[in-house]
Length: 209
Ligand SMILES: [Zn+2]
Ligand SMILES: [Zn+2]
Image (cartoon, rainbow, N blue to C red):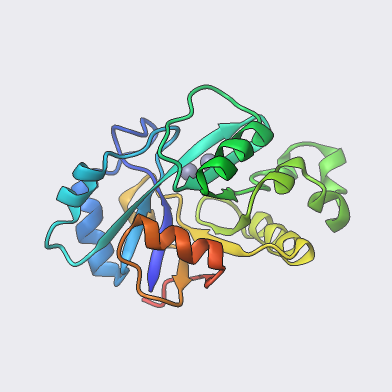
């Protein structure tokens, strides 16, 4: 099952231009089985998501992208909006208490531009980035970062033995589905998505269409 695990819509994410309704049509056209709404710090209302998905043949899931002092973290199964910047460690506590799942989003976004010191960062140093201590998985295919950034994330995930996910991080409709997460099983709702994430039955990929 092919799911774009990282999508932003307007107005819940003010930085996005995507109308939720056009997302459904686009996802169908691209041959995605579903997508996950991961707005910044805000979780969609379940009823609204059900309405949006109604009879459309597309599965829509709900996550949340939380800003932490150590970087953005995608969370699934956390029925709570986290406001303000928190630490990755504090978020991990919430995640564990709720049985939720967390993914370090685009962990090396723009790492080449941080400065000379970062340019020399080797794999060992990269893997010691704090955020990785507090997440279950790493986003290794993110549609908004460079291939260099993604490649480093993939190497680090492998080194740390953490599973990798993919998502477009779409803020524009044409960005939807650039990267996806391919799940082994058919997934119907948020609870099953959470189960499959915890079971590790997925891999990062590119939409075959
Ligand atoms: Zn982000
Ligand atoms: Zn995002």
